[in-house]
Image: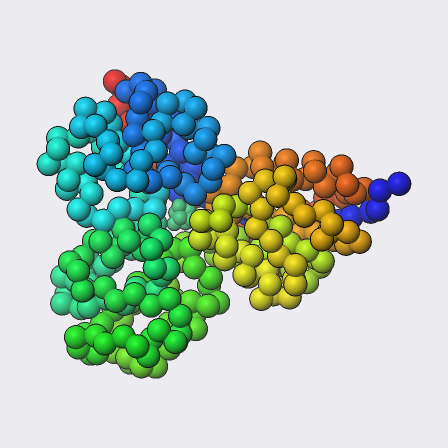
Length: 315
Ligand code: SF4
């Protein structure tokens, strides 16, 4: 007889509106222009999604230089530095920008502060495509990057009285609050958003994990190792008291030996992980335990973003 196990399924989990729109953009571009359609960077950070689009004719490249000028190219949901669309225009390429509107909102904020003569501090992860894209909205040196509270002491702005801050959209809400507090303590004149620029999807997925953390012996987050919001969910689970919190790409990554003897598990998925992988993980648990699924819903999401007009028009 398999052991009983309660599986707490976090909601919201998985695809956000920005990821949904970005995938639709690639699918609609393939319909409109036929294959191949080039995509600069993984459209969203999920191998399963990327492999599925590749099978339909999308070609994933890291740089615009790798795309021929006579095929359409799509920019990923994470956003791109201004130099990228400028180069596509110079080469007279057809391009569609799948940057999430909530990332574009941060780009606009950065531009507005820059026009007002403020230097920017960005809270984000070095090297992440979203950070590169947001920093690339402004000339070099205009955005200072901080990743931790300790980094705040090390930055040397031009004028401490003329500063603004912006953030990556997929950070830990709690860690970011600490960094914002450190910035305000060192630079009392700094201006910024009401709290930070973390998006609704990141916030909601973290809240849902916090709601289940106290009930569970283990947390599995379905997501890719390069997915920022998924990695934050693992950290949030650990910080909320769940000692065993792991990122898994799919069911085959689950370490069953480590889960032997547990009575309750939490399952969630990062914003770029499709629901089919959640179902795969639940089915795998059913193969090992006598599972009862309990949904823990902390918010309902109704956000939807339209695809760009060029894809809504008839070919
Ligand atoms: S995680 Fe947030 S910012 Fe990123 S694509 Fe989804 S909705 Fe947009």
